[in-house]
Amino acid sequence: MRTPEDYQLHEINYVMEHFGHLMTEVERAARDAIMLFQGSQAHITFDTKLDENVANAARFALKDGAQVFRRRTTERILSTHRDQVYANACPKCGRLPATPKAKLCIWCSHTWFDGA
Image 1 (cartoon, helix red, strand yellow):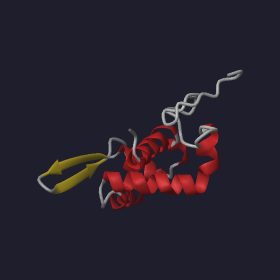
Image 2 (cartoon, helix red, strand yellow; image 1 turned 180 degrees about the vertical axis):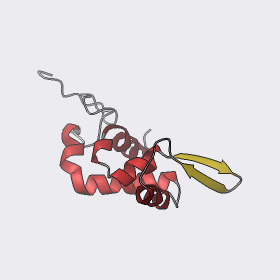
Image 3 (cartoon, helix red, strand yellow; image 1 turned 90 degrees about the vertical axis):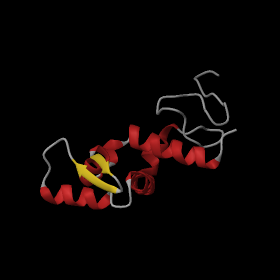
Image 4 (spheres, one colour; image 1 turned 30 degrees about the vertical axis):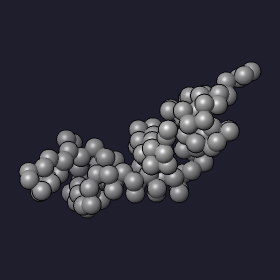
């Protein structure tokens, strides 16, 4: 049985994977950052050359960890661009399917194929 926490994680992954074009430059840099851990110390590096201000802002965005950053970024995108993200929400339950082009809800099993 799927829980509300499962849906929240799905929503975060869905937005981060399919709607990166709605991220700011800093959010994209933070998303693409490489975090290396040495004990409890995190080292953040970037695989592309970034403006120093963008790099510093991305490091700051990751200060509470990658999961907190992903949740905050998803919340910002949903509050700013909800109409673009929910373009393919299930017409029965309103939740996001597996992909933006999917026509089968993984939450309530409803299908909305043309003619179905």
